[in-house]
Length: 537
Image (tube, rainbow, N blue to C red; front, top):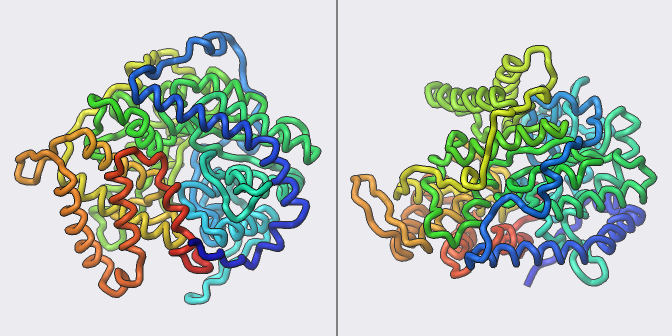
């Protein structure tokens, strides 16, 4: 039985009667069609699982790919996106990210936010203050004051994925579509203020799986613009290509949103998760350790270079992927090695023709900017880099990455997966673990890889070089051992106060369930209010 969520102090400010009416209008208009789209997702996945269908470029949309067309013009303040920083919508993060020196800050209601009601409402209120440049924070412990600098990053907002619901807002007796809540509240409260300040309402759209979903979003945006008296094309969006099916429909996604879209982004971590999930029934498509699926793998190179070619042909930006590394304090050698990996990654993206890239920590902004400045010179973007040399087939996108499957990799998946779920259940969706900033996307890789290895009957290499078949009993023994290791790392007191038991149960369920659970946030959301405390953000 779910306990009632605490009422956030900002709720009256955010949930005004006109704002609620606007969100209700979006949900009533577009929820029925979304239900059909989600059913189509499930039906297609069933066909893939049964071997009835194989992923390929769509025959019925070949005309869109072959014809010449371009997206609508891109606003001046989005012409330079060399470095983008991302993070959740808590107050301190927003201020630090906007001040970071990055060209863009993506304020995230999705993978880096645990959607407690407190977090969702406080996030909307924080963004209202950020848009009006009144956002402030005083750290009670240190006495430090946080406020915006004179020059700040351009603000984009990422709503939750289409599969998620917001149980704290009901429309006609059913939970509202979470994506429409996040999108609608931000647009309603800030569109006019943003335009008055010379910018606009800009969004990142996550986890699309088809161009039909892109058309749905285009209709949502057009309806919202008309309802609020905005000129068509005022709202601009960037779409994350972070599912395997969407990689086959990049042209079509751009075309479906051509009045509103300004670019595509390589959402690399969710893309790896989606590859496991989409091809889970294929016994030949089993991935190696997570750390070995790098951006230099042929399938990942095919995905990223095809995105650059497709976007630039259509006059849209091609954004690179996330560098999840964070500064390592007290160990200069390890810190230098981590920064060298980031530099190599950003140098490769810039050389490939990307217009910009993502980082998770403000300390990485100068490094990433340096690599893109070296490649771009005086240019603000690389739209002129057409990559006519790129030729990508379906086989290229579906090639299996080469590497080992190891007990060490399994143990790491367990430790990261359990600790991330423990933090998420406590209201924190963005967690530093083992020198990386982990969010729901990387946690999805951990649990989906364990599920795949268990259900495909793979052999894992032990540290002594021998191999053994992974069984559920072996997995459960390793879970027990890693739980003891976690307790040792965090301390017995913190372990006892935390939500580690619930996280352990959920991770085991996600890893061993007979049927693959589509998203870990679906069962986790049902536990969120009973395990989180007020003001968790």
